[in-house]
Length: 246
Image (cartoon, rainbow, N blue to C red; front, top):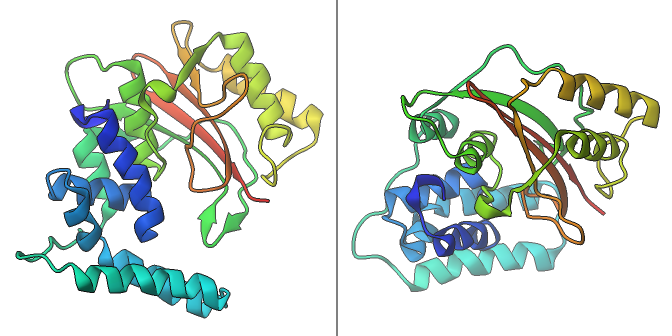
């Protein structure tokens, strides 16, 4: 998997989202800085948990929700570390680009996504990156690297490869709001037209991956529901992500 980390480390990565309120880039930084030790990473992520509490107070979360976050901070106080925790970088996205050895492609793919926000986080995005490594990258690792740059959860083997035609159909359904409950949506004819044009722009050798399976989906976004499509080409990888809430 990405960074050569084990499946268990990436499971801890996802668990730390619930434990700290931090987002995927911050959690990956903390695990990296703390040699993949989740206990040390929780302490390193304390500033993000404190920010989560401030946001909960300012947005009027129920007292029970605020109390849960305070309990997480109290638990950190009860388990102090012998050494100081590392301080997070000022620019986590820059850290993610350097760590994954990617560069963003300024010309974005021609795919319009409605992008309402939930707690300040966009519920739809599409991004492309190119690799800065000389050696070819494993397709799923390339997709995971772009996902992390987008502040999404890497999936590893959770990316299911699918044919081009199925990718076009799934993307159209996702854009129309069929696959992601409570997510952004557009009229079906617009969704099909935009999906068709987006897939047609991909090279003949492009490989397509999704987090959606026949009866389940891999957790890609911080939202309750999510759809993801990764397109891996020789020179770039593109990730489309749509999230939804009930």
